[in-house]
Image (tube, rainbow, N blue to C red):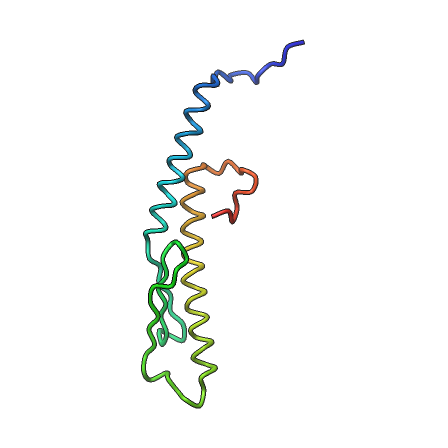
Amino acid sequence: MKARLPEGYNMKRGDMMRQVQKMQEDMANAQAEVEASEFEAAAGGGAVTAKVNGKKEVLEVKVKPEVVDPDDVEMLEDLLVAAVNEALKKADEAMESKMGAVTGGMGLPGMPGLF
């Protein structure tokens, strides 16, 4: 008995390969676009800001002078961590959004958090 494709399934192997190659190109382009983007976040009401790129590299950290308290360095450290983590989260969300747009929500195994 010969296996049958679902009704309405007319895609040929060559067509499928072209679609896969197009998706790979689109994913590479989307990844490059996000990696070239910059994401900024603030903590402490803007007392500390951090900027990262889509490659998850910290590009810049700014601290307002009025929050520098030599007697409370721990608070400044906490603000720095919070700002950097939020900027990285924005970069992750942008990557997931771009990849989701390319894959069309195909629910490919292993895709969530892959990028």
